[in-house]
Image (tube, rainbow, N blue to C red):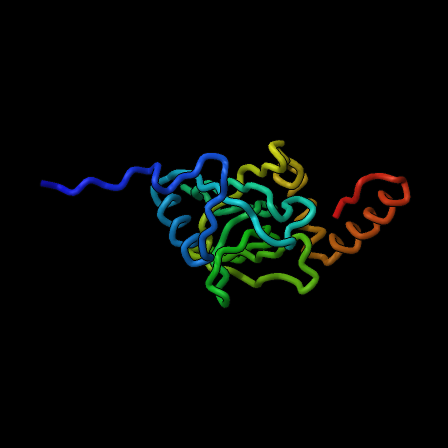
Length: 171
């Protein structure tokens, strides 16, 4: 008699997050994407602010045939840290991508080999709303500003202007 696989209900709690380690996240994401299925998870950290914020739900789709293009946001395995990170492609060299967070004052993550790139971000949800800014055609400009080192200073100046106008922070 063949043993039955555990019911998926054992691993899912409706409406709640299931915290898992970074290593488990990487393994789970690899397995799901390898089957051609998009993977959703809650982003942690501020390195992609304001386009992806801490707590946003991010959907990563498998790369399939084409490599990520300039400006696309990708999930990748950091070559040094060995953990999953979500940042933007700001350049290409052969099969490798130059990747950097939109809010990363320390600069680029470096050239990441194609085999370390797990998938591309195709959707961001914040408090139940879909956030498209940063994933559309403007992604090219964001990548170029980021690569030239102008994105962060521009974002900070816009934040000051926004606060002066009495608007909610851009973060």
